[in-house]
Image (cartoon, rainbow over all chains, first blue to last red; front, top):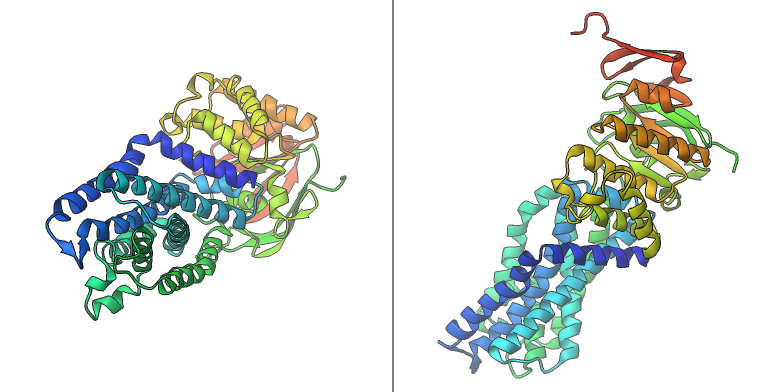
Length: 252
Length: 249
């Protein structure tokens, strides 16, 4: 446990050292999204009876929850490969599983923090507050767990993580833009509505819409929970397998 | 425990590419001993060190550190090791002090003790003024000093040093030699891979020469004729000479 805490403090310390970049990622980027799509575009038209800004804001929170784990896992594994930092961590007297847990928890923590910051920004800039905080937290934490595991799979599955870096755009771009973040699932026609159900971000965005305002059109909560839960459960053994396979014999 | 601290028994390792830098490797190192691992580039020194530090698992054979099997008890073993690998593995996101402090914390030291030990190593290595500098801005030699401080600060039972003093000035090298000697006086054990013949002669109780993945011979350093860094090194009592092999440029 001491190792996990130390690793969380290390990740946090590393991020605050790069405060300028952390501010851009955590505050400025989502604030720009919220201003442009919430105020400017959102004022132009409505979405199914509610304002576009209200439909889109939970999607921006979903993107923020995704960006936390993506950043923290990538900034651990990639320098770990380029500067051999991972070798130092592997020489610590802890099991490979504990190292994995510490990295995943770091991702979950950062996903939750990123999401919380944007929840605050949504309230400040657009005046929307979530109706159900517990639902928001449950979806946010599970989503952060999912994205942490996904990042580990992306970076540990290829022979070297720099190859995984190339997969970022193939995986993260569709997750960001086709996962019902900037629009609700109800706004899509077939076959796009069916296709979007293959993306976990759809369930995260729709679940957050339910948490913000249950009267907004959204997927049924059971479907949302099943979608996020099943994706996370499927990814869990895969992430552990990829992590072990790459690091049990340290060949990087 | 009275048995050997390092016990390597018929070990082989094959990389996924098929290369087999270590094959049929067997040797033992006793408590309090400084064992020098010599050999030309590509002889398998670094692979041997990775096997000893549990970063690689042997394809064949068995390695025991302080009586513990590296395959089954890697976590306990790592708690007893201080390692300076051939390539520095400093955390670029942290400064010099941060690298030492987090190393201590990752190795289970309490926060106060970690900070105390970090300070204790910063001063003599001349790192005090650079304590807040990001490690990526340091020179190669200074990075090496931080690596050494990391290895020593956990006061390990076994130090495994892969060319630890490469790039260091003579003064720092002498300081490191003193620390290695002091470590052994307090019953610590050292496995040292080096390209410096004088380092092997000065520090090692025994040296072994890796050739073709095997340890050809082990002896006191003064009794060996060893190819080091592409040169034939004659280790005579009290005198260490290097000469270029005939035909070599």
